[in-house]
Length: 188
Image 1 (cartoon, helix red, strand yellow):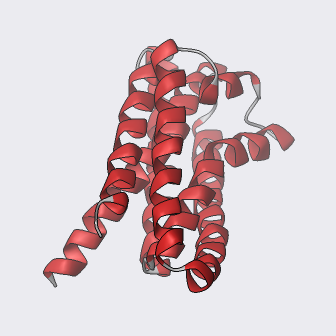
Image 2 (cartoon, helix red, strand yellow):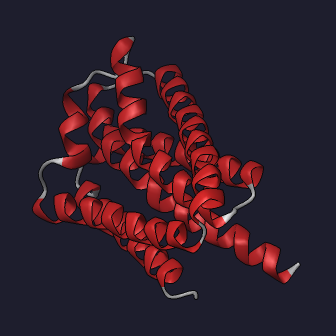
């Protein structure tokens, strides 16, 4: 039971780190003065993408793990560190990364571009978790739920705060991914 609780906490922290992109972009999108029904729908679509992308990544990761063993685990740790650094650097400079997506309107095709853009990193993390052998259902439910909630929170706060927290949330998310990457690299 203790190991299971630890795994859930780890997955929720990773889901939080991945959801920071959705939160940051949601802050910007909140300036579109969306209706609550639109906010609800956008959060659900982002959540679905945060379920599908890591699911595809986990499938690919399990295949790679079976073929390459411990080398795949090291590659997964490095991948998490690289993703974390990519989130951190744009957040620190306040340019690039998720902030570029602010110009995409969250309606029609723009909504799917938005959802895909903020969930691409969850494919890579799913790849790493597939290599590591994480539980699929628990992982994708954590990722989807947290991304949905953070998207809603970002959109609603964006209506009020107009993007003040975006830079800091990307830095926090990148730091969490780097920490888990280091944990994977040094767990052997």
